[in-house]
Image (tube, rainbow, N blue to C red; front, side, top):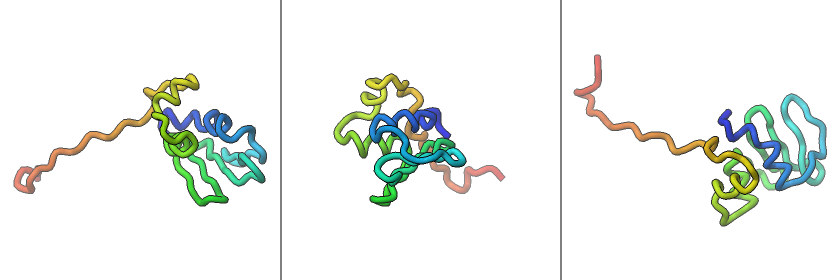
Length: 100
């Protein structure tokens, strides 16, 4: 789990309100009739009524379209340095340069 994923409960609550269902094994139901699930262990969410889900960044992009994720996080007091960055690209090496 990324450091940003630890904030999934707070972020889901800001968008969807209080949890509506029981917490079971690190999962909790949120929204109307518990249609949205949040996995507190992995930092992921899923909307059963729309069959979409993802991580923290996906949730912010979905619920606050047009807003920069880093700005949104800072506005709600979440350190955006926890946000995962793009991974470094690996330099291609021809087979002749690969170690034996």
